[in-house]
Image (tube, rainbow, N blue to C red; front, top):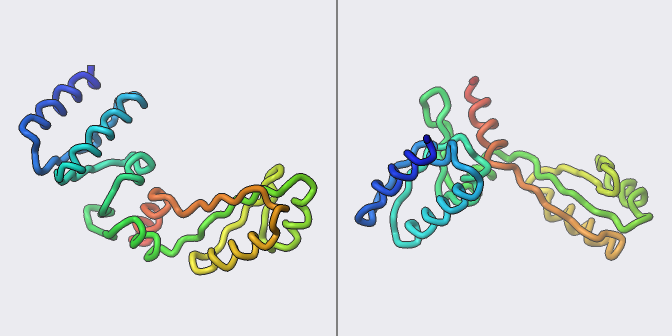
Length: 168
């Protein structure tokens, strides 16, 4: 099976504690548990000082474990840097999900222009630079708010931004 061949290939690649690993779509065909084990293995290698170059379209799974990212579009490099660098450069909106205490959603929605109600939750987006002032305003509602989730642009959002900007 493809998964078995991948495991054998990986085992061969890991013989002798390599200093550099180059992996192309290494988790395609792996189930979620194998995938998690695979990344735990990579985390261990990275902690031991190995450099790992990983090419992947599974952006959500690599997002949390990258030091530096290079985005290629049409065979050309269109962006590179840390995830934080790319988030700053792309300057995409940040989403905020605000959970109002029962009975307060309307009041809070009226005080936050642009908020969209989704059941008890309020969804807002703001520019990166407005995130902290907006959080301060929401915190000002005190216990009328039970939760705030800040959702930064994902690596997929960033990838789309840089590859679209390039006319792809």
